[in-house]
Image (cartoon, rainbow, N blue to C red; front, side):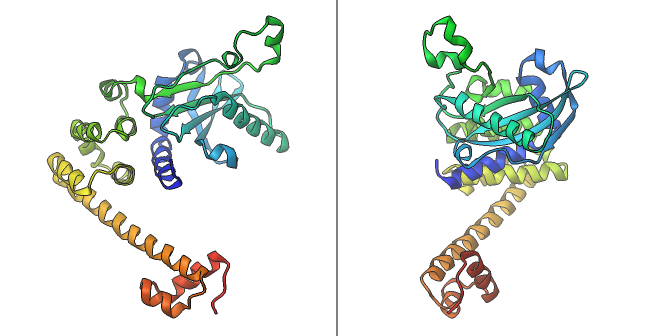
Length: 304
């Protein structure tokens, strides 16, 4: 999966799970009840620290929430979004490195060490093979067990949910729509079918400014992540409501304009690296000179 596609999935993932009401319901209905009953989900606060290093960035995106657990304990709930459309063979190794990074930063900043609850969110085509860490090592002697780390993670694999399950399991509209879109994003026929089934939820979204913003995120995600023509989406939105069609067309138009501008900037950067003058770049790309100068600064090159 290339970086452009990864960034598209990443942005939608963060848009969906940055909604506090959505993440509260998601956590409460997807992970172990024995853990949930001790979490005070009203204390959930987004952690702004960057915990992924360059190596982990190639496999995961993350959102981390701090939360109260029991009477005195603090925990970190880490939602890790698996980039790949195929299951990760040894996820425990990535997760262990990730948790160690969190604890190393806490030690460095002289903070209290907190337990980390990792939740892997996976929406690939194949079912995830959820093994325990010790299973990687085969049948080993009991005396060696103490030398193997023992920890686990929560797994949310959308392939284990039917579309009907997702529509009925969650009350939050953004969560319902977002999870269904992510589950079906790799199957274009099912994607179109689900949009049709979500007409009531989409119309409810469009009644609030927050919902309209999320609908924009959905539209951008679908346009950038599938080969479905925008006209096909527009026709489908037209069957939902006039408002859905108009807002989708507006978002698609902005996306096309942004795409053309990005293409011009990319061309200008290539020309800058080859030593072309501002005059020639302006003529071929139709960019303003101050924009070309800004690109030169980014490229750390000076005009001739």
